[in-house]
Amino acid sequence: MLAIGAKYYWDHRTATQEDKYSMLKGEVFHTFYQIKYDQSADHSALVDSVFRAFSHSLNPFDSTSLIAAINCNQSVIADTMLKHVWRASEQISRASAGSYDVTCSPLINAWGFGFDSSLPITEAVIDSLRQFVGYTGVRLSGDSLIKSDPRTIFDFSSISKGYCADLLGQMLSEQGSANYMVELGGEIAFCGLNPSGKPWRVGINKPIEDAMGMMQDLQLVVSLNRPAGGLATSGNYRNFRILNGRKVAHTINPHTGYPIQTDVLSATIIAPSCMMADGLATACMTMTSDQIPEFIAQFPGVDYLLILSGQDENFRTIMSDGFRDLVVEEP
Image (cartoon, rainbow, N blue to C red; front, side, top):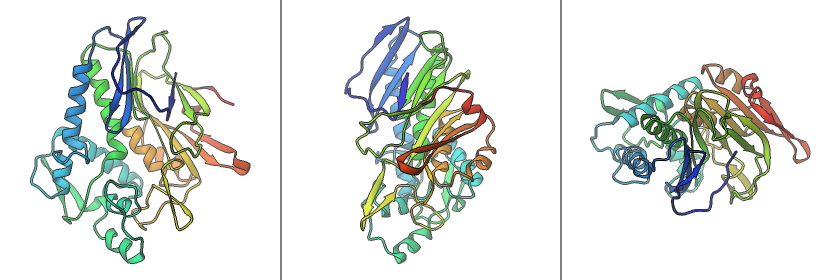
């Protein structure tokens, strides 16, 4: 069983054999990964090739990537990965009425959560940044991602990590693997059964304020009793800043430019793909719990678990009927 949010302590790869299953694990993109699959072959080189291709396309921290070039207004051809992630993010943006927006990076940076230094937070600064934030100012034309304002910046990190997990799963399927679990920084792509011949199991952690990720108190355990899919969890309980004595969450409302106020501490999504689970989990953190069921209903085959703030430091949970059917352990 894998616990979502668990932090791993290795800096190398190992290959182990467990009932004809192999495991690869290591560190990439400032996070950890673990891949278990039903073959004895060592796919380390193929895993590396997926990571390299992904980084070349979607890694905003790689100055040679396509997304970095687009952010710098260079003329480049968008590859299949970039176009696929843009279309998915645009779909989620439309369904969420723009509360989920991959062009929100300037505002995220201003609040100190992005990859650039934070700016002094004033109403004038926020208003000026909002002028070039908005997915509706972007269109995909052929192989070009066209911005109506050259100051618009993309950051697909809220959905691309899940997509990378999907790419790894796709690679394993192409190599003949029918059973696998790919975990990349807490996002999971899965297919088939575990080494015991049963559905993969995943533990969902309680949303405990622990910036180091050391505390792993389980809220519940789910059995991924589906042929294939993805699971992702998003939350504000670890990634926050203290600004003027006040806790500021890392999810920013692109309409107002200010941090989201919500009763949702974490959202876990199970979807047909890890990419959609990743993006939808992030989108849920831009809403209150009463808005989420209607939002998720727009996406077939998607189920959710919401952990909400309660009284006396207790948590409340809300889950879809489909998610409840997968729960095998609950306090």
